[in-house]
Amino acid sequence: MNKNLVIALVVIVSVLVVGGVVFAVVKNNPAKPAVSPVVEVPNPTPTPEAVEPDVVSATKEFTVTASNFKFDLKTIKVKKGDTVKITFKNVEGFHDFVIDEFDVATNQIGVEEEDEVEFVADKAGSFEYYCSVGQHRKNGMVGKLVVE
Image 1 (cartoon, one colour):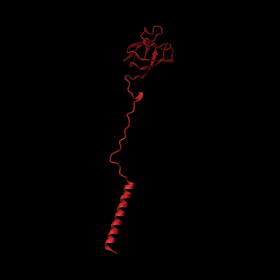
Image 2 (cartoon, helix red, strand yellow):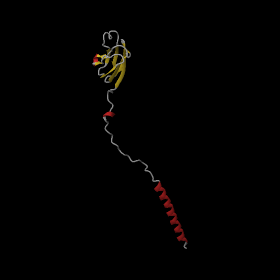
Image 3 (cartoon, one colour):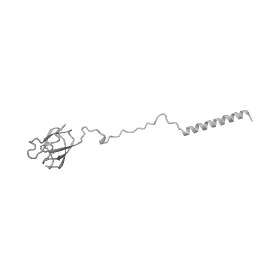
Image 4 (cartoon, helix red, strand yellow):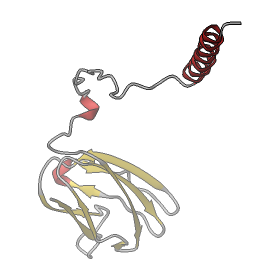
């Protein structure tokens, strides 16, 4: 056989083997692009829930317990615009809970009874709450609602 023919066959077989190996490696491990594609996402219009309101209104809940001539809670503090929920409980005597400036009044209730009132504190200031039964207010059965 011709020496040049043998060399040519060795070169061709070597190229085919090396090419096959390179093809197999590339096929099983494709190159990743150097730069990730950029996808533009439009800036969505915020929903009403996502917008920060100027004034945040919240429900503030309090339990006020009444006994003879006193409330256990002397001061209630809330922010203007808050919804205020008062659970009024009576453990002694016969009482109610009244705030004139917000037209708030529970029923007059006896021992081991309770009543609830709910209102929006839409005025800032300091407001007295009291028991309107008999002379209870005069005898010191009062407290203060502070709306900031």
